[in-house]
Image (cartoon, rainbow over all chains, first blue to last red; front, top):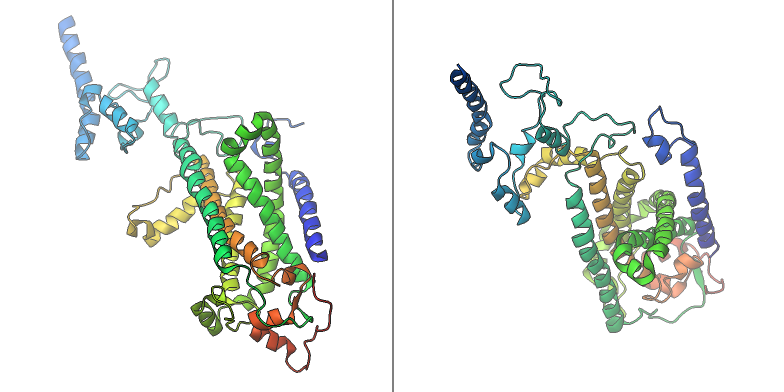
Length: 41
Length: 405
């Protein structure tokens, strides 16, 4: 049971962390699709 | 003088016009389009409306080269040497030189040819057959339950347990399983939401749910891939087929008859089938999922089609050579269709797995719940594995523990 709950917690942590990591790594949709002449944010 | 000039111009025009007609004659079966000067005819339009396949090459090849046929260059008309029709055909067949301020391979595609085909497939057969597959699997399981009932432990319970899966194995399983359930539900929300959920609770509420669903689907995907890698690393060796599997399969694993327990090691043939299905479908769904997560950056269908064409597989089954000149959107559409088809097969298999691992078999859930299984259960379902782990000791190594809940 403990292993199951740990796994579910890890799923939640990964889900929250994934978009933050991807955005920081420059993979946000707006950054990937805007040209160099576009100022983001 | 004017008459001579008019005759000369007429000759010039007539001389220019027969060129496309002659090109069509060369293809043999091309219909006569001389009445429209090579453009599509009423018959073409009606055939398309009847849903017949119309060979579009006569339009695809009639795109611009920047010149009016037979006229001296350069052209000084408002559109240069182009006609409106040529410009639209250029856009329609993705041959226009488009500059867009947005980046990415899709930015320059203004008209996408295959979009409608994809939408009709997604909204039609994909939903219908996918839905039937899942409902059919649930019906088969319900029938199996009604006929066979719960598969009980046949022998007398010992009250002792043995460790079947350690905490790392259970963690890997639940990472994969938990993320799979979330991905399955949110995937179904994305595919069926418009037809099944909007009528239930309206567009606004569904919009919130759809956004949340998309967020979960996109971000939980990474946990699924982690779980998949862990499960493959942990269990691949024990899932290599062996001679006991044939015996197991020959008696249907004893699933259909009471008191039949073919010998099996840690994993029986049925579990091995599930394992390899999870590996193959899991890798495939991850690959198409990554292609969807990073739009237009990881196209994989043109390359796959090229390989298949080179192997002659589509030609052998009568599909002819597959189109390898895919628009960026087409790559995404194919990835979505493939992702969903694999997902339906995957879900159908996992529904059966969930049933057998919980309601369908007494004592099975404990293997992934606490990790400890009843010794009698282990002897009945995994005799060879039980003998292996208890070899050299009178009692099972983990025996004597409290039975799992």
